[in-house]
Length: 341
Image 1 (cartoon, rainbow, N blue to C red):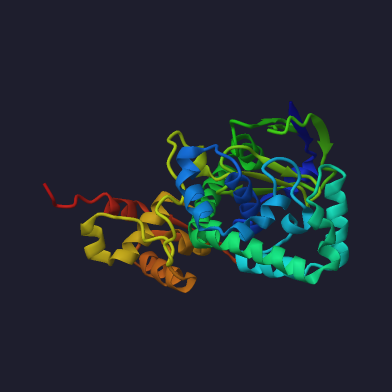
Image 2 (cartoon, rainbow, N blue to C red):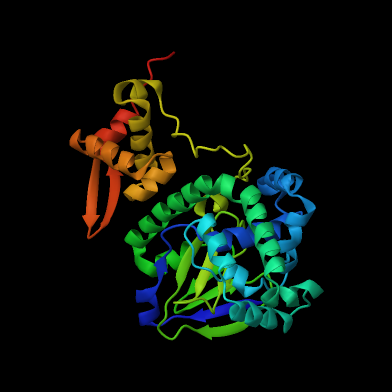
């Protein structure tokens, strides 16, 4: 079964890539994976560690985030940029929206008996939000820097695809196993078996990379201001299957990428990591660079300036956006022999 999304010229012009991960998508997708036993290699260690840490009362939220079916809208339709902001917005959801969301969900699937009391029982609602915060605290928050880094690396890949062939090339390569571009139609093999034709009518789509959407695409046609296609980040579409979040919470984010000792000795290890990251993610922005290396944006900007002044990178600017690329000299420095036998 296939979902067929029809694009006009206006839709192609308005289709864009999200500039970072969406906490609501990552959290709801993570909640589904906690209730399944699939993707054992990639998610097995994370799943075991998270479920072991959760208290029984912290699993309350999973009743409204089932592994199959609809996820209640007031828990998933939130535009937040961080997990903490997501939880805060859900805590402040108006009662009317909670009631409407639950009524909509009940039309499609059964709800636990206690769920209908949520709009009128502040204590119960607080208990649900505490459950959600506890789950996020174990499943997502400790790994948020890695999720951001995966999304930043994906954005660099998609930017190169856009530069090389425009939006149509991007749509053709966003998730080849499940998504196929047959101009002017985007054909998506849905796990749910949905078979339908959808016309975007000039809205375009937001392409949202996800670290927890391990394989299957997720489509939200009712999202505002435009429909959203969630797809696995580029690393998850590579041939090798490797564990995600296997090392457990890092606390201080990702360490700088490893580079040859000779380059680190010459430039300093952090600056060498910045150069290494730019070389492997050409076109990355300063914000993406900071996330990938695991340093502050101001520090990333400072290191990029030094590398640019040394002729090791170039920086291209378009309005408020920067794109860094390594120069031939920078590549030669990275490829310098280590001096070891």
